[in-house]
Amino acid sequence: MQVAVLLAEGFEEIEALAVADILRRAGVTTPLVAVAAGAAWVTGAHGITVKADAELTDLEPGGLAAVVLPGGMPGARNLAESPAVLALLKQVRANGGLLAAICAGPLALQAAGLLRGRTVTGFSSIRDQLPGATYTGDRVTWDDAILTSKAAGTTCEFALELLRRLNLAEHAAKLRDSMCVAALIE
Image 1 (cartoon, helix red, strand yellow):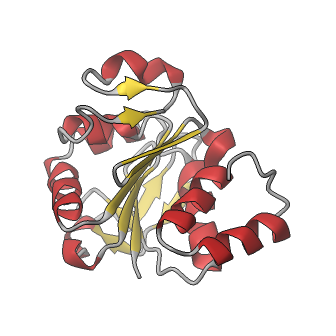
Image 2: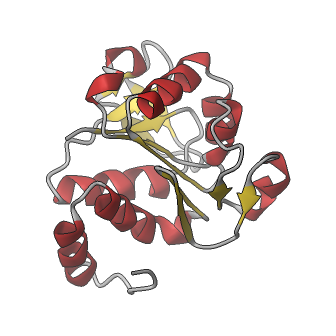
Image 3: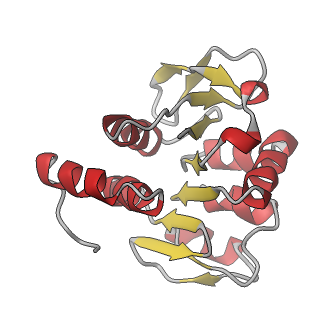
């Protein structure tokens, strides 16, 4: 099973790296994927530079169980403005894969036209930028193979819920306990 975490310049470091860490602890192949062509290194919103495992063009959409879209600015905006990212999201969705976005990450799902009629959450400042979707403001929201989460502080819950939705509930429960993550969602 493979889940790609997309990195655009200005990504939120906690949201990208903690999700990748938790998924990898559960045995999920989780490449950190640079959105910009030729970008071996990507710098996050808080100045942390990360070496990507792959580039967007390396991905086979049919081989992805899910795609994760971290927030952060301008990272989320860079994701939403990338035609290659939007095409990938549509292909993964069409192939039955899951789409997971946190904080401002749902902006890319909106730009891809995938949120109309969906119930979502995200950072409160993007609420009005999601026309056609119902915004909950909850910490984590699931609707029709789309997982969204509110902000950096909900990252562990988001990653554990993603594991559950990938049919890895036992791993999620063990990690929740071993990492001392509060059981805020069940």
